[in-house]
Structure formats: C-alpha cells, structure tokens
Image (tube, rainbow, N blue to C red; front, side):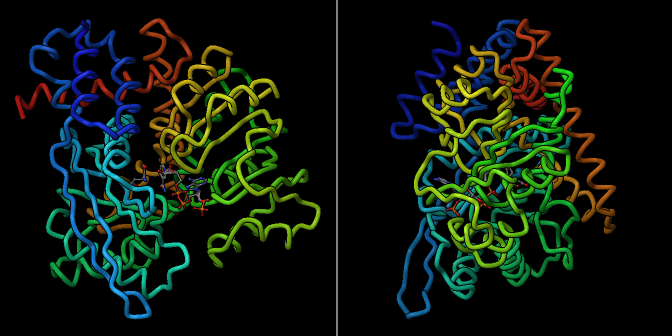
Length: 443
Ligand code: NDP
Ligand code: 2IT
C-alpha cells in the first residue's frame, strides 16, 4: 500500500459521512504523489497525516431570537486548518447545507489556494447551517452578533481573519465587525470584505469573479485565443458569478445564462447585469424575476444550465453542481474551457471526463484564488493604515492571477502532465506548505 493510500484509508475510516472532505483529500493526495516520492522525509515525518488533520475545530451553539420572539438554535463552525505559512484565512458560509464535512473540505482546499496566491496566509473556513433567505435585516444582525459572541475569542488580525462566502457578504461582515469591536475593544483588521468606510479594500467585491476571468484569460492565451466573441455560461448569480460575468463581458464575451438554486435564465442577447444586480444585490430576490426586465429571455425552473451550447463554462454557485452527465453535454456541445469560480463545483468523474476529452480545466483553488488574494491585500492596507486605488488593487490582482497560472502550468509540465491544472495547482500549492511545515518541526 502506498503512503497516500494508507492516509486516505485512515481518513475514510475516521470520518464517515464527510463525503466532500473525502472527495477533496482524495483528489489532492493523488495528484501530489510524485512530490511525495521525491521527498521520503515527508512520510517519515507524518507530513500528510498532520496536513489532513485540522489544527483545531471550534463547534458552537448559536442561539438567536426571530422577529416574532421565537428562539432558534443553529450550529456554528470554525475550522482552523493550517497556519504554517500565515495566520488562518478563509470565508464564513451561511447555508442550510453546512456541516462539518463541508467545512473541512473548504478549509482543506483553502490551504493550497492561499499558498498559490504567494501571500502569507494559512487556510481555514467557518460557517453555520443558518439560512439567511427570507430573514429580516434585524434577524440577520441578531444571528451575526450571536455567532460573534463565541467566535471573537478565537480570531484576531494575526490569528485568524474570516471573510465572506455563500450567504455572507458586506452586510454580515459589518455586523460581525461591530460585535467583535464591542466585545474586544480592538479596532483591527480581523475581517476582510469590510465596507469601504471602515477598512475595506476597493476591488475586493469584484475580486473573485474578476480573478477567475483573468485566470481563464491566461488559459485561453496558451491556446492563442481570447474571450472575444466567446459564448459563456456562468452558474450562480451571487458575488462570484456577477463579477465573473461582468469581466468576461468587458473582455468581449457574451454571457448567455446564469442561475440560482431555483432555476436558470437564458438570454440569447447577453445577460443584462444591471438587472441581475438589482434582483440579487438590492432586492435579494429570485432570478426568475429577470424575465420582467428582459421579456425575450427564458426562465426554466430546476437544473439545466449546462445543457446550453457554449465555448466556456464558469461554474460559480456551489460544490458538486456539475456532474458527469453535465460534462458530457458540455463537451458534446463544443465547450473547450471550464474554470471553477466556486469551490469544487465539478465532481471527480466530471473533472476526469473534461481532462480526458481535451477540455482545459481550471480548478477552483487556482482559478478562484483572486478573492482571498485581494483579502490579503486588504490585510496589507489595514496594517499600513493606507488604502490603494481600485486600479492599484486590480493591477495587483491581475499580476497574482497571472502568477498562479504560470506556477500551476509550470508544475504540470515539470511533472509530465503539461496543461493539467489540477495536478499543477495541487503540486504548486502543496510545495510551499510542505516546506514550511518541515522547517517548523513536528507541530
Ligand atoms: P453568494 O451567496 O453570493 O452566491 C451564491 C450563488 O450560488 C447564489 O446564486 C445561490 O443561489 C447559488 N447557489 C448556492 N447554493 C446552490 C445550490 N445548492 N444549487 C444552485 N445554486 C446554488 O456566494 P458567492 O458568490 O460568494 O460564492 C459562490 C461560490 O464561490 C462558493 O462555492 C464559494 O465557496 C466560492 N468562492 C467565493 C469567494 C468569495 O470571495 N465570495 C472566493 C472563492 C470562492 P441562491 O441565492 O438560490 O441560494
Ligand atoms: O473560498 C474563498 O476563497 C473565500 N470564500 C474567500 C476567503 C477570504 O478570506 O477572502
């Protein structure tokens, strides 16, 4: 039995019902096998066993009272996965599906993503099974304050710096920040994605989506191609999806479809992003309202976005939203590039199908790293007590995404799998963390 098989068997035996965590570790550990073969000292020092076990997991009760006076209890999580290369950094997700396995997969992926940015940030993730849909602002505030009443003691600008993710945006970060400050009396850069009036960075809101498109643009350049004239599908209609669609459109592509968890819209003339922003960012409503803005567009209930012919697919909603049958449809319809704005949106068999069928595939930990990279730029600005202009941040983001693409591509080449960004990103992300962990001794 190889080292990787032994570690994966232990993970499977010890973590029943954590399917997403097993999926993420399986992919990463298999791709780094050549590095492990070249470094027998990693096995001798139980490096993988230490890497796969979070430094600590905090699970806590989050009680709150709704507008009718009814008391509810949700479960809160923070997985502080790995601080070898910097303080813990990663988002907070509010979604009813949140459980320990999902928190661990996201935290595990974050370690390598953060390493790929080249910036000094460790990996972690947090969240709750709280469902913000349909809640009033006061209910969301009550929940965020209660969440912070426990989490504040575990975080800090040099310890652990949370940010947004699904269901957590500027509104929630504001409530977290206010409560943290009240509990600790400390005005510090303990969150990113903050509002611009209290330490936020310009371009953080746009960063994940823009970064995804900058990365995809590098993938296109390898093929001597560009976004100009391409037909693009973007799943989701949240923070990542909206700004991916915006940048792809700016670069000359036509985004013809987007979705939410209820259904999808198709607009042959190109999606009207002002309408999507009003529906999603202002009204917090359902995407089916889009047809009220554009009567020629179609709305379809349920899944189905991947059945539309396209050149480029950008899954930007959630994990395991793109299955093998979707991959087959995309390939049959001529899709040649897939880049993940979401974390692990593509199942393992669908990923393999893309790789086997000549589709250039950008894995999330590389392609969507622009969000956390810009979070690290927000931390830098907070430390300096300065703020950069939008263009300064955007230029840095672009440079970081070009660098991630280059490093992942070169690692894929070095290990004999040129153009396989899954292998390249996993290896490039792993190497820095492994070296830092070895240098710091058994801890
Ligand atoms: P948002 O909450 O802003 O948007 C999420 C979008 O995805 C919504 O349109 C939502 O629809 C849809 N969605 C969520 N769950 C499902 C589901 N089960 N089926 C179909 N659609 C679904 O989140 P973000 O845009 O911030 O995050 C999207 C993805 O990007 C996540 O995987 C996140 O981890 C990842 N990511 C986010 C980063 C960031 O900076 N925000 C950085 C890197 C990655 P509905 O409104 O109906 O729920
Ligand atoms: O998945 C992610 O990279 C994020 N949700 C952003 C994390 C961050 O700290 O900005």
